[in-house]
Image 1: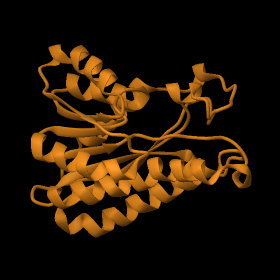
Image 2: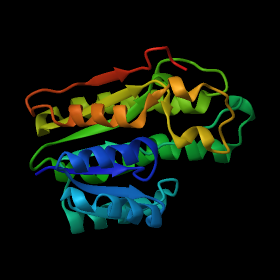
Image 3: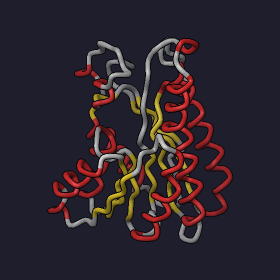
Length: 235
């Protein structure tokens, strides 16, 4: 069964991935906090022939996740591929950021993924499955003013490695796609202050095509980590 569960599905990489997978014949479970934007996306994908299921959930609220994930699996089935794409960023000095902002970044970029995997992976064990965690080269590079983001992505990379080793015997594969800068609406958020040349960044569509390539590998093999960088460099 080709059923993919995509978080952060209404913008940027998540939206592009939904479009790419639907056009490739995958049924989808799309999760985001904005139901109206999810419905617009579903309408846009109506001519693909894929079944598009929607889940409204704010991943920054840990208390929403259990019910939203469990209800969606009950309604739509267990995915064969889980794509943890949702994320957020903040730039500013580490020791000057508020505890609230720190907790928000760790919750969305790391803890929510732990929560989602804790709910979906046990159900995947029956038939096997693939988890693709969207990471960043910030997981192994230290960028000033981006400390919380770097920490969250570094922890995500290790979480993925540990999950992969623990679940191999259950026919569950876990991998990361490690990205350089991608031209997404992330750069327009209030928490980001930058003047990078976005025209030289990766496109969301190129990233989504790469995610599809990972997802459609034979079950007998696994790309443990695929790094995709802009040809001109990191930024």
